[in-house]
Image 1 (tube, rainbow, N blue to C red):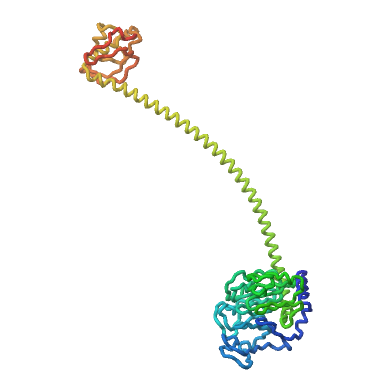
Image 2: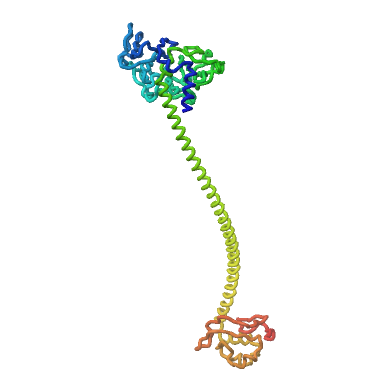
Length: 455
């Protein structure tokens, strides 16, 4: 409850009076074009009368006809109207329940009904039906409203920044002035193309068209967001009014425009809002605490994940090293395989060369083959070996020859034809020491003397 008491004390001090005094009699006064005014001499419902030019339907009687005598606005007959504000071509009315009604020209969105149509009869601004409005003001082509919670809403033409929304666009529905959030605004006022307000610290903010210095910032630049008037800081300003091309500030409250701001109902609403804010703050604190707990849990999980990641990295490094080792071994095996393949190819060539030898023998007669066999033998041709039929087995025909021939004698494996004694295939020869000469196949005799064949 300390927060609520502080808020109430601040609000009461800023207005310089007891909040219960607001129910007392206050005299009405119209302070400037487009600014709201109202008042009450007795506790009867507020009735609204209009007269004059009815162009654009700004009188609220359902037509565009002028009225030379005052006429009650029938649509608002049963409403308790406590304030109203007039622009050049549109009108706003505020009921005691915080509802705003608007009518007249809406070509710039200044009526706040979500379109740019004119209205010849008062129509409720639905966008603000959930906000309790306590003050209203009209400019040339824009409008503004102040809620009991200290928030400011603007709508209409923003071409000169007079809406305070940070841009120059038109808005056909009320928009909250975000730059003023967090400050308790006590009063607003619209000039033709600029706007001003006062907060609970008696600071004045202005924005919109800056021509002729009407914003009070020592220049004539247009401003699209509320900006503090430094020259009025600490002056105790409690009232401000905007006109066509100038602005007025006062150090005492402006009567006639403070009705309903700090009356008992407003205090109840303010207390309710403070309670809601306290509940919201408690809820946000709980959410923050839960978020902190989740953060701690997430930190632990993150640390565990980092450790797991480090382990996985070590395993990955080990697997990578093993893969490199296997790759090197594979390269070595491939190199050995290549060498073995080369050796095998060489052996295949040698084998083919040996296998191709009998192909020459088959083209000669048996007599020549016997002479060649005798030529290979270390014995003279007159020996029985020279006249032996060409039927060589896996060992010499005479077992006694196994020891008697010198080492130069070799064994000849062959297949034979039993009918003609002509060999059909000689597959291989081992141990035969071929002479350093050669054999003349045309004559069937050696071309080198027999004695040249080594032992």
